[in-house]
Image 1: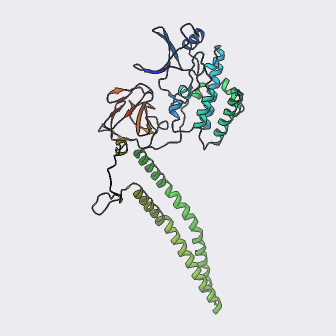
Image 2: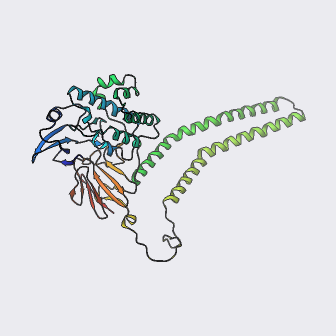
Image 3: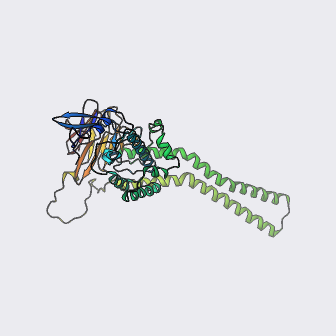
Length: 431
């Protein structure tokens, strides 16, 4: 069992593992890993404390897969990138004569720079167990169910791993024919490009409002296009009506019609007038009435969804119930479950009604964006365990504080009403 701790100094975050094999064991592997900058591995250093060997792995500005994909699915693009970079690391280990089985392929030990999308792996000399099956279990549980290509690939990989027939080079060929060559001679500038993230999950009221405003602006921008489309549908009918009107006028003015022919002309006038009236009415309905009707319907639905029921006195009406002993309601069911910012210049709050929730300043990588320079890209995560709510620091640069006490990186603490939470320079009060 690995003894793992997290530590933060002035500017760096570290994952610390105690080397249980002793000082004299694995000297070659430790020296190779700690004294060389091996592409794709977490930078590490060894320290001797009280006769123990401690391996310090730097995880500054990186997040574990366990944190990144908490509440988010893994698509084919990310799966491809993970396996290609794993292939690169394996090739580098062979170059340094290191055993590839010592890679800890567990989601909590696979880190990613969320800004560049590059993966980093943890090398622990003489790892005692094969961690690849556990990685497969994680990928199966987190694969995006709507990405059928990713689902099929993950289950195929898991089947090969279970039969001990997994060959990374062969797996890469599933993605593209030249994936093996790309893995061997890959341009690292491509790996350092910013990754576009998707599946934005709006977890709070503020973001719902932003999303709503964006949608309304999009609808306003599309309104001229929609109106033009409706007009194009009506204009042919109007042209037919005008041609019919001209023909009827011409026949009545230049020809002497019989009684039966006059009846036909009269019917023509009636049909033409009916078509003109119907097309005009339909145009009016599409351009004005239907849009108003949809807005009123949407407003009514939102009112029913969010508004409480009030009586004549203006007080909320409670449903009729059997009067009995008072039932105790835990504070977790009675509190607002919100963090209110104490900075008057930044009027924002964090809604904790839908968890898990990650906060930070990198849009697309977090569930809620905090526009503050002192906040890290992925700063903290809020999670629930039963009626208890916890906050976890995600290797933030300026730290996460609860009532003035700084949280250890990746450490979780329970928060309660009245607690002061600080994320960088932003202070919140939990209610």
